[in-house]
Figure 1 (cartoon, rainbow, N blue to C red):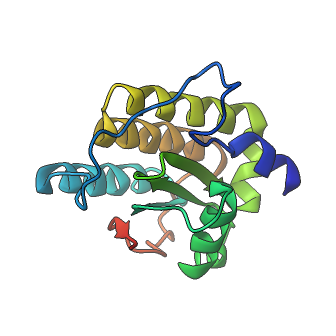
Figure 2: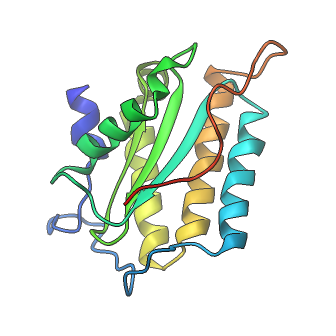
Figure 3: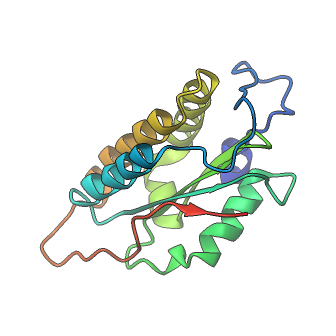
Length: 171
C-alpha cells in the first residue's frame, strides 16, 4: 500500500514535477455541465459492461488532507468500494479548488496492473486538466481503466453492478 501512495500522489505544490502545475481556472461549484456529467456516467456504464471491475468518480472543491491519496483512500472506504467481490474497484478522486487528484485502485486491481500503469494514468489526467479538459480527461481515464480491467477482470454472465455509476460530489 505504501508504494501505491508514493506513485499516485500529485499536488499543485509539487514543484519538481516534470508535469508542471495545472490550473482549473476560477473555482466553481459545478465543474461539469449537465451534459458532461451524463457523458462521464455513460463512460462508466460502457466500461462496466465489459468488465467485472467497478469505477467511481468523486469530485470535491478542497482536499481535506495534505495528501490526496489519503483522502482518496478515505473516500474509497466511505463509499464501501473495498467490498467488491474481486477487490477490483477504482476511484478517480479530484479536488478541483486545491488542484489535487489521485486514482485509488483496490488491492486486486492495483497489484495486477502494476505501478507504471497507475503513474501513467495520473500523468495523463494531469495533462488533460492542464488543458482545461476536465470531463474529457476523466472520460479518457475511465476508458483506459476499463480496458485494463478487461484483461484481468473480464465480464461474465454472473456479473452484477456492485456499485452505483453516478458521480459523487463532496463539499
